[in-house]
Image (cartoon, rainbow, N blue to C red; front, side, top):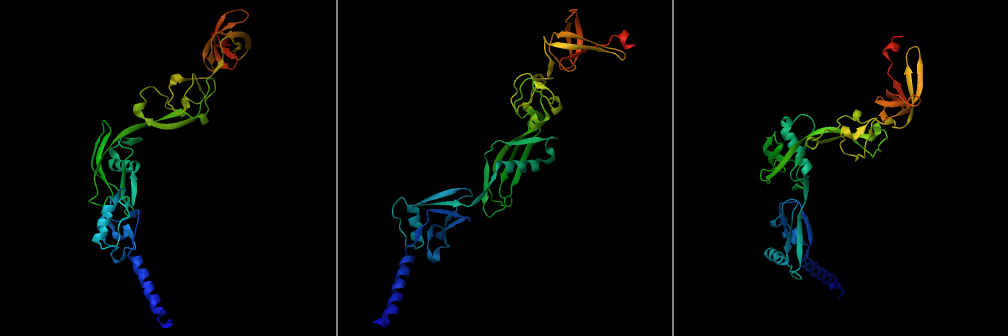
Length: 315
């Protein structure tokens, strides 16, 4: 009996191996990087016919669901010993791909437009900012632009795009965009309270579409720095000249020192400010003793200066 044991073991192993080979397993989620779906993509242990193409692969970036009936039919055609366990058996096949987004397409459009674009900073906005093109995972990420038209008056751009650029069979997708001229303007980076001077650290320059700036906005940071808001200004928004002013250093009703100075003499007096005033601004003051109204220039907090009369200036 013992001398037949190796033969029996060999036969048992062969039966087990044959049973395993006859029971291929369905793969439920498959990612392929080829234009066709092969039998071995769908079934494990598909045997010698695993390399047989059984269907076209979905387009890059797309997927397809293969149901039990379709899978059973392909198994019969390829003489594969597989049957679905139920009508709910299915496989999802996805094509491995790389995505090219609208930003990359806009960048290629800008390159193609070249010197046809307006001088200075511009923005090219895609009509469909959610557009994405897919190319096979193994393909280079390149774009082909053709049929390009540009209306400089309206800023409208139209073209066809396809990817990858070298694939003459790639789908041509019609795209549209618009070119906007940009203008750099200073904005506040934080809320600055009225009366508080605007510092250089509070100002940032950003580029906005020129068509949005249909009113008179401050265009230089130097026109903001050192001034103060007249009212609340939202950070990040363009600022109008009427939104800011030089900080008030003399307030109406405040006692101020009035100075009259020549090369020979300096006279001072007390007065009451009759109106608000910023440094360098002319205001009216009332002498506290004589009650005479005088025109003076604000020189700083609590101080104003009188113009030197011609008769004194000559001395």
